[in-house]
Image (cartoon, rainbow, N blue to C red; front, side):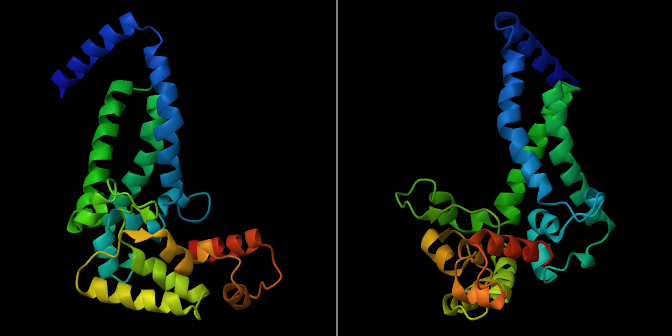
Length: 237
């Protein structure tokens, strides 16, 4: 570790000597890209209230322990202290490590922490979320279909359960739920998907739908209000 830090200091020092503004520019670039990404991801894992960071949402457990959550029926109350601490550290890391890099606090060490964090995140996607189980998921990067959606999180079953709760009369959604259930029972991934299928079955893309509006008692509401109600119900589902 010490040798690695020394090597980073050596190369960083030489670069800074040649390009004095490089470090500042690097921080601006990091803030514009990874800081925004990490904080947006972290916010999706917070529980309710001011102390929500210490009470991670079910979505946090789904993202970090996807297969265990599926086995527990997406009820994170079955997890113990170890899993809670892992999720808590993951949430805190998404907020603190990027911030420390941007403000220049222990930058070299936090940069190594960021590299480790991205490595763990990548491993979770590849193995935990089953990206490697279906070669077409990775292959979607290279195909020619403009309607392909690249996904690396396998919690379609949980999303489908919520979707059917706000759109119970959607025949396309009912069929998709059956397909998802069959795939997961066989241990097969449900992703990637396509935009056409999402538009037919994803309630977040269908706030204009008469069936959803009727079910929510929002027949005459604006699309944005229907969308907000769907989002609110998802947050507490």
